[in-house]
Structures are given as structure tokens and as C-alpha cells.
Image (cartoon, rainbow, N blue to C red; front, top):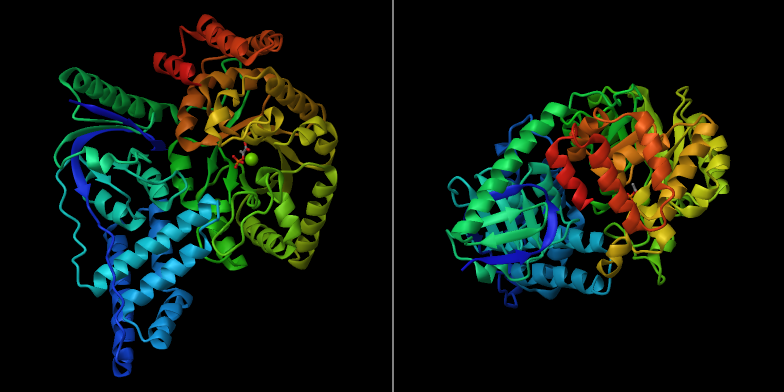
Length: 585
Ligand code: PEP
Ligand code: MG
């Protein structure tokens, strides 16, 4: 009998293959008191295991094609850096010395002290980074015990099933033909999730007990779009899975043929189609999928994936990498948007009951001016290598903008920089949307962050499943607000983009074009699709369409009208598979 499980959507794509179980049991450790004469050799035993672990990770990295870039390479480097982190090693060595205990015990007690300190922290980012330290701890323990770090040679079409998987193991398995991944635990911000996305491996996590429900060699289907897996599909299900796989492969191929289309409607209205990237290496994918610019580089990952905040030099090199690889009109670097529930390792969590309303985005940066000035310096220095725009998140009033501009001007003065860097703000808080006209007078461009704008306008927590049914761009209040912002920006002659998820939703493209948006910025995979839609519609009809939509009073009415009207107006030219996507929007 087949078993269908629903988990967390991690990495898009569809895979059908045979189960390979990854059974890395947690190493059991006992405490041994050492004869003082053996302390020195115990320290050496630990340090050699660290060295061996580093060699293993370096080996996995060296097996990659040198031309390969992407998050997985970045994360392998991060793991190597952690193994070189003297602070962590010193703490374990000190524990061996002061408590005169065996290395295994010292490792587990230092790590459990760290985990105890983070026990009540709700911040997902911090927890995920702690998970990385744990994976490395387990690797060191396996090396101390002399346990082989086996990566079985997988057959073609193998799907990995594990309780949990470290990012390093995932890269190694991917190079051994793993085509899909399903795990009991894990979330979308984990390094393993980012590696899966970077390598294009369809993945579903958070399946709770998938390990208990599969046996090695069983047939398994992974739907990374819906977060569903099917174990031992029946004959009928298998026919359906194979059909979905064929359709997916054909669609991917077809989509890439749209990548080179211009971002332009049939009647000649140019709408730039840009990429949102989370990590500098993604810029290659952005080029490959046809991005016409970087509409938003979210710099949070650079800050949350390391134990310490990156230095000015680290940031400069990273920004320069994006700018030098992408010879397009502009690279928009968004300043740090952490705070609230997003904190990097080593920093305290947000205090207060409403972190989304707390010290987040630009509020955090103005509160920690030193970190902000460092980031601005790095961006300004990198701007020598191409056209850079600075985008400021979570702005709620004009005083914040003036403060930011003053800091940018002072920093440019310190650097004797003669480059003029455009400064824009995210419109993602209703107060900023209402004041868009006055804000437009202060800045060079506006970018509407619909993810937060929807959250704050509708009072719907964007990560709370219980209220997710209310989270929709089709709510008339949201649409009116967006239309107002676009109109106000255009009246002041200031370009306006949309960079929230809405920009990449098929059925929202005619709406945003009809409202007069200049740029749509989205996850790289959505770019070819949006370009194709633009090439099927006209600005004139889109405007009429928006006029009708804005007369409607509920999100349900809007959604129905949009689906119906798109079919009627453009159903004959928009590719059929996109029309199916609209139902999911
Ligand atoms: C948004 O809020 O729409 C946005 C693009 O920013 P983020 O999703 O990073 O908060
Ligand atoms: Mg936002």
C-alpha cells in the first residue's frame, strides 16, 4: 500500500527514485576521567580529529567542479571556517585540561552548554546555525572514534531519506547522484535547505517520521512544489507520478527558452524583470534565468550565516562579486533587515511580544550605527565596480530616510567617493505607503515589499499557518494601497518596483502592469515565466482590467474575477501550464 506524507516545502522540483536511507545515529558518549599525564595526548587526539574533519570537508569541496559556485560552495566554506574557528576549539581544549576529561565528553559538554543557552530562543536562524555546529561536532566524534565517513556509491535516481542531514553530507551525496531528499526534521532556513535549493535537488523536510515509513530500495516520489512525498506508489499513482515528472522536465526546458525574452508587453511597455537574490553566488543563476537586473540582494544571509558579523572587507568582496559578474543596469543592495525574530548567532533574541513590530530593518541599523556604517562603506566601495543602488528596508517615516541619507553622505565624504549611488526605500509598512508621495521626494526609487505590506496592512503574521488563509495580495485594501503608491511615485517621476512574492505570481503580473509598475523583482525561477506573460499581454488591456478589479470588495471576488478575466482576455495566448499555476496563486 502506498503512503502519502505532507511536509515543509524546501526546494522545488519533482523526483522519482529509489530510497537510500541515511542512518547516522547520534554518537553515544561517556565521561572518562583522565590521568593528568594523558591530558596532552587527549588534546592532540581532539585536534587531529578536527584536522581530519576539515580535510574531509575540503575533499568534498575539491570534488566539485572548480567553476561551480552557488550556496552549497559557500556553505562548505562556512563549515571549513567553523572547523578553523579557534574560539570553539579552544573552549573544548580548555575543558579537557581543566576538567581532565576525555575529548568526546569535552565536545558534547561544550556543545550542550551552548544548546542550553539557546534553549528558550525562538529565533529560527540562531537554531539553524547551532544545528550546523552540532553536525560538525558529530563529524569530529566519528573521527575520534575512527568511524568511517562512508558515502555509499548511490545508484542512479537515488532519493535520500534521513532523520536529519548535514549540509556537508548533502553536497557529498548530491555528487553521488542523489536526485531528491526527504527528512523527518528541518526547516526552510537551514543550511541543508539552502544547499538543496542551490543544487536544484527537490526536497521536502519536516515529515516527522518518514524514516520509520520507508525501507531501502522502496520507490519514492518527491513533489518539492507541494511538499508531498509518496512512498511505494500504486500502479495508478505511479502512472500519475511519471506523468508529473515528464511534464516538469518538459516545462523546465521550455521555461528556459523564455529567459531571453525582453521584459516588454505586446504594446511596447517596458517592465524590467529582475532577480531577488539571497546570496552573492545566486547571481549566476539570475543571469541564466534571464534577469535584467538585481532588484533586491537580501544581505541578511551574509550576516546570519557566520558566527560574527562580516567585516567591511568581507562585505566589500561579496558585493563586488555580484557587481562584477552581473553587467546589467543595476544591482540593488538592500541593507540589513534583521531584528525581530531574525538574529544571527551570537546575538541576543528580540525582546517583547511583537518582534515583527520591534527593532527590525532600518530601526536595527540606526540603533547599531557602527554596523550600519560598515555596511554602507562596503557598498560605496563596491560601487566603483558598477551601478549600485542602496535599498533601505522597513522604513516607517521620513526622519529615518533623512538619517540614512546623512550617514550615506558622511560615509561617501570619508571615502572621497565621487560616485553617486541611488538610494531607495522599501514600501512595506502602511504608514510609508500612505506617505509615498512625500517619501518619493526624498529618494531615487521605491520598491514595494508586498510580503510585509500584506502582513502589516491585514494584521496577518506572514509565518502563522492559522491565519495564512487571510494572507493574500488579492485583498482589495492591499491592491488599493499598492495602486496608490505606484501612482504617487509616478507623479513625482520616481521609478517604482515590486519585490515581494507577488511580483513572481502569474496572475498578479497583469494587475501590476496595469497599475504602472516599472520593475518586477522575484526569485530567479519565476523570471522566465513572468517574461513570457509580459510578452502575451498589453498595457492598455491591463489598465482596463485593473479598473474593474478595483471595484470589487472582497479577496474572493478579486481572485475569481482575475482568473476569469485572464482566461477571457489572454487565455488563447498564455501557455496552458501557466493558467494552471494561476489557480494556485
Ligand atoms: C517584502 O517584505 O515583501 C520583502 C521583499 O522583503 P522580505 O520578504 O525580505 O521581508
Ligand atoms: Mg520585508
